Amino acid sequence: MGEQSQTTKSNPKPEFTKLKNGDSLKKKKKSEFVFCKVCKLNHDQGHRHKYFPNHKKSLSAFLFRFQTKLSDIRFFFKNPIHLAIEYASHNRFCCVFCDTGIDELSSLFACTNAITHLASGAHLKNLKHFLCKYGGDMDGLDSFRILDADIVK
Image (cartoon, rainbow, N blue to C red; front, side, top):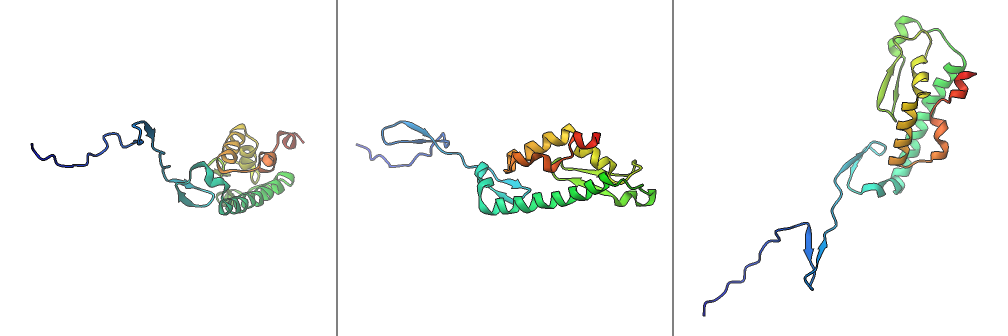
């Protein structure tokens, strides 16, 4: 009788693992690395990352910075100032929710294009998506945009 060699065979289906009784059990898939633009960090924690204390702290600082920009824009909304052409290139606004930069090159008043953008439906849609993805209070949604009722006034 020939001697049989004990060789270990590799698992042909690595996404499955075998239990002792022969049943297959799906192996838990590891999350891929994603970039959190709030924390400025790559992580593999999945959706649970937004509940971590450091993320919440970074999110509150991130949203506070945007609210300070928005308060400056609301000042120009309540007190319109004529924008000189030579200063138009200095008047830029970057919407962190929509990942767009808004230039004021074609506007006559300061922050006209930024006000129009912040009141748009596309901004509202991107804002909801951002707050859902990165965690945030949906009740404070109106504090990150300009309402149509304010424009009518």
